[in-house]
Figure 1 (cartoon, rainbow, N blue to C red):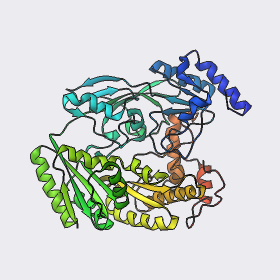
Figure 2: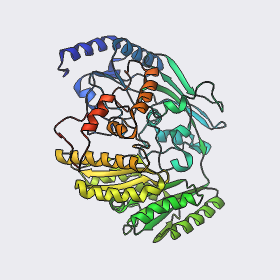
Figure 3: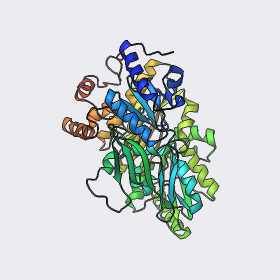
Figure 4: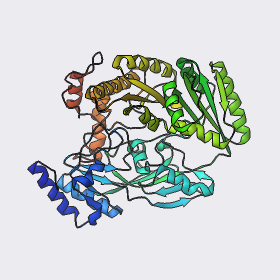
Length: 494
């Protein structure tokens, strides 16, 4: 049964399906409600919309033909990976097509001598490391969702992970991208040479959230697996001391392989879930990892321990085995599902601030908990200031959801006030599009639109995401939160 209620939408759907059916097998073209419902949102489940249809191509030529058809019919296209994104970047458009790259899951080439792997966009992040482990190599970016998230999605969002401080984000670990424009034209960004000819569009494309082109192939860097890795779990009896310790470590000239922070509500929730061995009496803990040769690790662990003690750590525990190191990290990587065990719903934020402002932001968030009458667990990539507050609420209570949304906006705008940004690795999507109005002025947004239109003049690729229009910013200015109250809460936000 087709639930497209508008006669115009029904006509558009039939028009699109008629063009796509000769191109794709029956099972690779979905349009019935029971088939398209699984695609109505990504990891930001608060916002949902069913598309007219979902296409699951298996070849690059099919992608080219699909995009040509959508360009001709002026049908919006939303590229989709595994759907693990947390900013609504893969939420469908009602009158559009979801283009799923889930079947693009081949590892095309592994070159252990050049330390590269060429993969299709549907390959899981962790699958690359598993495939190259026999060569003593791995792929460094490791988002918490790495068992499920795909490389194409990582490129679209410029994903990071717990080891991004030392090894960098996706942009620092990808060499070459092959992609298709909305017109069906094949383009390539980057290359295997140290310097690629022409304009540097590589850094423009990574993190563009599917707004410029559809990824079909990615070549990534591989790095040698360290001979040894150890983690210090440092406990602090005060959040401010823990926050300041992060800046102290970097100021000492130490770049740990990972530097993560969790507050007490987070460690309590996680410990009952995975039994990671966390210090539940600490107001906050830091996980500080060192990797390299045994000699390098011993020296760096000693240096970090001295800095942490000077910064006020009440307890230091160094992992004594690889199993214990992985257990420490399992707690951090399972913070999100642990939040789901203690609250009906949670809203994961993603802002970035200067390291020296971590303690200030944590104090502000504590005050916001009282202001919005909602709890918050804090877990984050402390080493590069990428914060992930988890706002706890009951989604069945509409007023609680409105307060959670307002709480999140307050956190993001506080990040900007403290000299940071509204996102670190989750992207803007629809979640933070209003906050873009706060961080960037009209001239800057016009420049963003200029880049978008040079790739996609018809604004068909992932429209209404990431870059706010002038009208949206004017409307948001009139709808700004005041004293925790959202004006006209009965109005739809998106």
